[in-house]
Image (cartoon, rainbow, N blue to C red; front, side, top):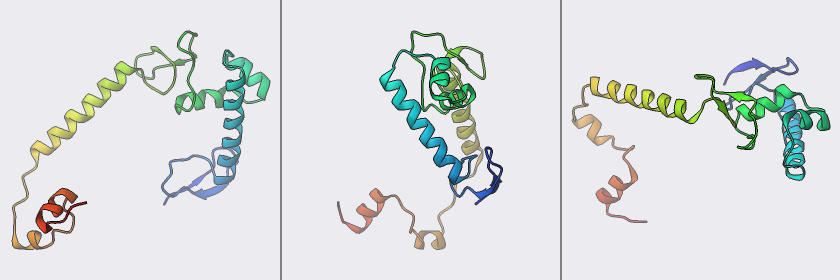
Length: 148
């Protein structure tokens, strides 16, 4: 559990398992505003970010945050206001374009597999064989002879 200050009101709060930068009260208000934006876009599907901001009185930076969080996305046939943080390509939502996402994912996978290759395998001992509490379900089913 981490103690932080709310990015909106400055109050101190604990965020538990969530990665929220807003306290529960501000998060609730933010959700209400997001629902308003969502309903407005369902009723007016061909509006741009400036029109939504003007009609609802919600800042453009907040609407961009919703786009970055992938809660909204721009239409594919419109000029996007978001750019990939890595290469600068125009994107509809999120932080990275598909190409950069795939590249970063491959880098993480290769680093993860390289890390596992460097580790020595765990040798079976009487102690760690007797404490087999955390076996995958399929192995326990075979070992104890029960099925779903």
